[in-house]
Image (cartoon, rainbow, N blue to C red; front, side, top):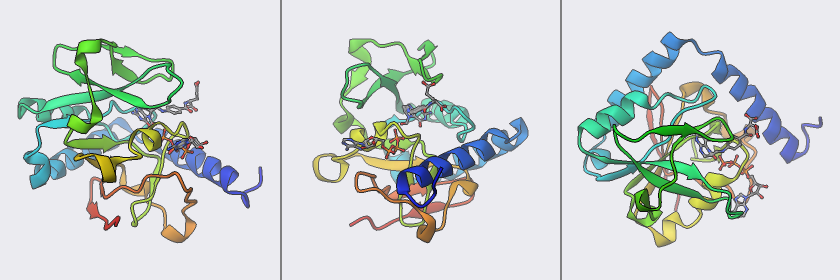
Amino acid sequence: MYLDDKKSYRKFLRMYIRRIRRTLTFQEQYTAAQLITNKIMTINHIRRSTRIAAFIAFDGEINTTLLIKDLLLMHKQIYLPILIDSGSKCLLFARYTFATPLICNHLNIYEPKWNVRSVIPIEKIDVVFVPLVAFDSSGNRLGMGGGFYDRTLQNWKHQSNYIPIGLAHDFQKIPTQLFPIETWDIMLPEIITPSYHLIVDTH
Ligand SMILES: Nc1nc2c(c(=O)[nH]1)N(C=O)[C@@H](CNc1ccc(C(=O)N[C@@H](CCC(=O)O)C(=O)O)cc1)CN2
Ligand SMILES: Nc1ncnc2c1ncn2[C@@H]1O[C@H](COP(=O)(O)OP(=O)(O)OP(=O)(O)O)[C@@H](O)[C@H]1O
């Protein structure tokens, strides 16, 4: 592997951070989940929103179970991404309630069972919580490498009212000078970790 080409460097960075993420203990994950949930509950524009897209964590991502539970208890409408084999590689968002069964997809991620009536156009969502592998203080985001969120969010600034917000562990932050940016990467205007709430000017 050669780290002087960007593709290999992105692959290396993903592998490196994913490996650290997977070594977190249950206690570390639980503490992080409590801290990030408490932080999110204090953010006014999230408290005011009605429809929120979240994700079910896998591969050591920051655990969202407590967050989703608290948001449901606040009577927010929660949506989760589902992957469909359409070739478009865009995500669909389906309604999730305490009564919704989750199934494990081919990438080992839990998602609601596909049902045409539970899917909502992304334009109707207020806040989209976005998983990520690495980020920097300018709002750059590196994901799992499928390009799903990059494609799904590509028009958010121009055609939509929703705001994408990255959720991550603190250690997933990379110095900007080391960040391998690609032209198609979507910049995140906000990123929340257990310790801070980063607000970026993406204009
Ligand atoms: N929680 C969560 N949900 C999510 C995402 C995510 O990053 N986190 N995604 C964000 O886009 C989408 C799924 N994207 C993914 C892209 C690539 C791989 C991946 O490379 N997985 C395997 C290898 C592939 C395989 O087994 O076929 C791996 O772990 O290496 C996984 C998920 C939609 N849902
Ligand atoms: N808006 C887009 N339109 C077409 N192709 C895209 C777009 N965004 C990303 N891609 C393609 O998807 C592939 C994976 O992109 P990338 O490595 O940035 O994924 P990622 O951001 O890490 O993953 P994800 O967004 O799923 O978490 C790249 O080969 C890229 O060419």
